[in-house]
Every structure is written in C-alpha cells, then in structure tokens.
Amino acid sequence: MSIPGIIIAVTLHEYIKSLTAYKLGDTGIKNQGRLAFNPLKHMDILGSIFMLFFGYGWGNPVRFSPFSFTDRKKGMLIIFVMPFLFNILLGAVFFFAYRLFLTNLSLFTFLSHEALIIVAGILMRAAIFNISFAFFNLIPVYPLDGVHLVSAFAPMFGVKIAQREKILQILLAFFIIFGFADRVFGPLVRMTLGALIF
Image (cartoon, rainbow, N blue to C red):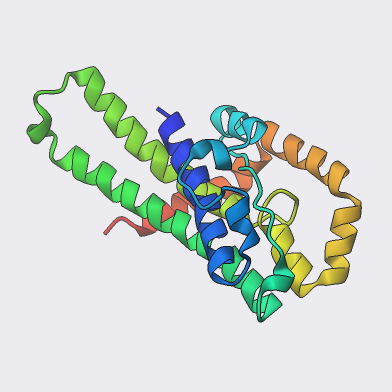
C-alpha cells in the first residue's frame, strides 16, 4: 500500500524541480531526461528502500546549473519552494480523497472489505508520504533540497557542508534508521493533516 505513494511523491517532486529549473533557463535539464513522468528517471534505489522501510528517503537528485538563472538566489529559492509546495498540495489532495472515500463507502459496495482497506490505505499513505517528503527535504544534506538553499544564501556554510558530505550522509542514514526523523517530522506531518480537517 505504500509503494504508490512513494512513487508519486518522489517522481512528481523531482519532475517539478526539473521543470522549474528548465523554465528558469537551465536547458541542460532536458538532456538528462528529467522532464518526464517516468519514475525510473527520478527514483533512487537506496532512497526508495529507506522510504519503504523507514518512512523517509530521497530521490535521484536533479543536476542543475544555478549560473544559468538570471537571478541565481531567486532561482534557487523558487526551485526549493516549488517541489515543497507541490508535495504539500498533493498530500492534501490524497488526504481529501481518503476522507471522501471513507464518507462515501456506500458507493463502493462492489468492493470487498479487504479491497476497501487497501484503497483507504493507499490514499492515506500517499498523503503521508507526500507531506513527509516535503518536510524531510528541508534538511541541508545532499541529496536533499535544503543543501541547495544553503549553498545559495550562505555559500561559506554550503562549502563546509560539502566538505563533510560523506559523514553527514552517514549521520542522515542513522537519523532515519533509528527513528529520529519520524520524531522530528512526524509531528509536522500530523499537524499538517490536522490542519486539513475542517
């Protein structure tokens, strides 16, 4: 039940990031084949496994050139914000679909009890994965989006992060595996979902 949500969250996040960079002037994105809805272009094997088993992971990072933007800082900010907002929006859409499904079960009498549970589970997990993926990408550790924002607005700090990239990635893995990511971002996800209930 988790797999559809993971594929949708990661694929559309990376696609929106690629499309935004392309629209801002980085035409090299097109040559990477990232302007497509093909999950194989956007999914990272290890990142997807982490998402499936631990709830948090990453996609195949988009390689873009900030210097192709007219305003580098503004461009980096837009590229950072657009996928975040899109994942939140997608999470909201799936959450509303989940609630709509539960309040109209009488329309789905042709489905077995097990099928109803599966459909509800897919919709709810898709909502959770999209919202959690949006927040998790705020972390400034490659390959997550936060590192690009830091590099654009605090370049010296970005250099220090790049110099410690491998150790930070190992720490990020432990942060996910031992449940710290869920302790930090879980409340944000629940608070976001709670805000959508009205």
